[in-house]
Length: 273
Image 1 (cartoon, rainbow, N blue to C red):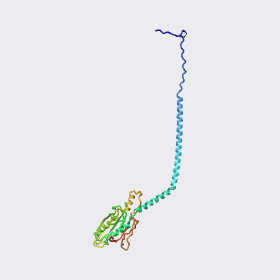
Image 2 (image 1 turned 120 degrees about the horizontal axis):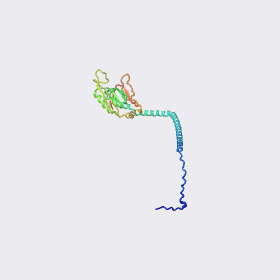
Image 3 (image 1 turned 90 degrees about the vertical axis):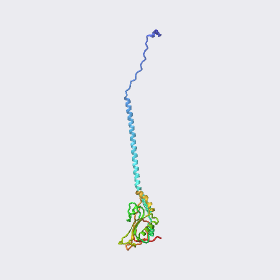
């Protein structure tokens, strides 16, 4: 099939002109972008520096203010320190007085009851009382005294016979407040030994009377558990001595406010009423 040109003859040889091409834009370099990025980094670094500097200055100002406040508070505390020291001293003295009052032992009543319980044929040569506090040595030489930490009275003397010693032990166990009566020795003396008791070779004895249920012992228990804040309690207070001109009779009296008493006498006990 042959192609047919339908254009008029005057237009058949005229070729269409190409449309004018649009001018190409000139491609710019990347240097401008680099400059803009560098400027942005500089601005960000400057802003960070300014903010950091302001923060440091604010912290320094806060530190100076806190230091000044601390110095002012220290000066005020130094001015009020004498009052705090006085309060601590007053509280310490109050606790000491309370501890001493709570640790009192009624020596007068204990000795009165013991003197009434002594048989007539028993003579005391020494009597020692102490509180038995931990870490202290008792005034008596009886080896059984340190076995129990409690108020106790150590008795040494002589009796006309061994049954008299047994009777004394039985009477001492019946004394009010006594929880234990221990006999460390009861030995007959030789005929050459001078004794205040009558009879053939009268025995010399040494016994300890314990008061384990004493209120003073319960009051001292918290102080022993906390040694840092323990209240000082005297362990032994020397009592009256026998007159130099001869033996004296003991009436069982002792200071009511003391914590211990020590007497050295030769005594003829009275029968219990």
